[in-house]
Length: 391
Image 1 (cartoon, rainbow, N blue to C red):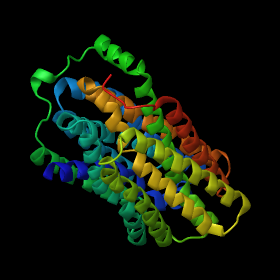
Image 2: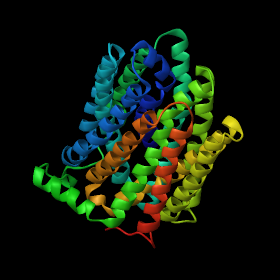
Image 3: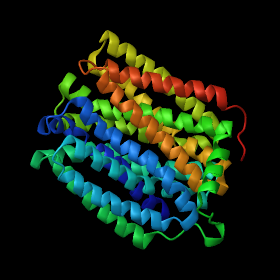
């Protein structure tokens, strides 16, 4: 149980870093004299940093063990948070967010690899669902926490808080986590073997399908995260406090999906739950687009299907990495890195599309979410057939 709590706390640093500053996006826009699209690039920056960083950290974690990359990543997160707190322009803030993403990448990939070191198959999916319970509280509480900080200080105080949180996490990791990859199981770090490992992963059609499904569902999630602050505050007129409350309630949908998952795994195969999740997400997203386009029912008719989209993400996202890593347990770090890179790069690419499509209605956000959720359903239909076994 301690293993779950510690890893959950560490993984929570990612959503905490992303979600705490969301209520501050409009004030950052005003304070730094930036456009909404430019401010949304700060979200893209951290997602790209997390994605590309995992490609580097994954092979490193397979070669030198799990603890050292984890500690180094947390140290970079702390330094980058301080940098963001003092950033004088939107360009430097975006640079700081990329650096935060690189630090958080180590936490994300090492945590997933540690789970694979200890568990496999349905047991790994169950463990990841338990981690989702711990880390799922972060997006529920983070915007409310960010809103509270904005009541007493500026958006810069959010990044001071993130630096403090990183300091607490690096202390926790140093004393509470043991190494899970013994020396005899480590892989030599060299360019050619790393490229060969990535090549073997990309030749596995089912693995690639799982990577794309995970990336597209993350894109659905991050389209909401990147667009909701402007949509809910600027279009529907919610206050900072009201936005935090609505965001937290919606996050309970994600939490519900991830916590129902372990019980469903007792009766159903993980790949069946993935197919169910992407189907729910696609149907709910299309309903949300219809509500936004027709303006039928106002905000409640946008929020209701949105809750089910987040539930679908919570049902899908614990199972895709469990299935993908089980197929390639001998290279769990590298496989986790490729999976994580796809999640954050595809997710990061979706967020600025919303700003580029305009900010006078909820339609751009809902259209991007419907597109990514529908593509996830198509990929699942084409690649997830029958019982999946190790490659």
